[in-house]
Image (cartoon, rainbow, N blue to C red; front, side, top):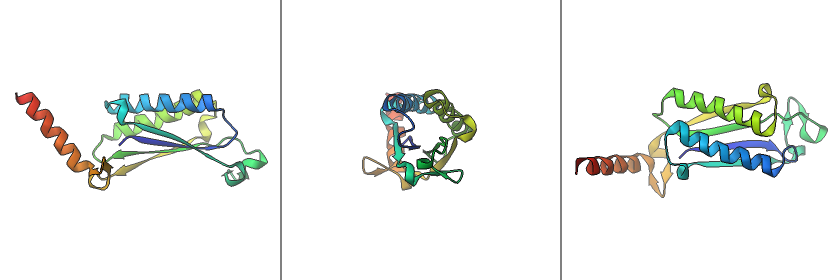
Length: 140
């Protein structure tokens, strides 16, 4: 379930910087949520400069980078997780892309487990199956 998406203005950052941002984002998510990194997804969506407006100025007119990110978590996660991720993704943007911290915006979207699919099975059912399987292993 852990998914983060960054919205960037095309041409303001090179592919190597963006790749490092995405790799470190996956590691951060896995660390904070204590989940396998294989479950994590990170995406960078680049918007054409003429279709991005930051502070009233189009990217094609030289707007300074004003990055935006959002991520999703299943409801029920502690608020501390969301707060650590909000700060952590902001830190990664500052460190990897060299942007001004005050120009970064981000948010978290909570998703109800029955409204999220993992392999075609809603997350509430999938989680219950995983919890049951762990209990069976622990009991044997």
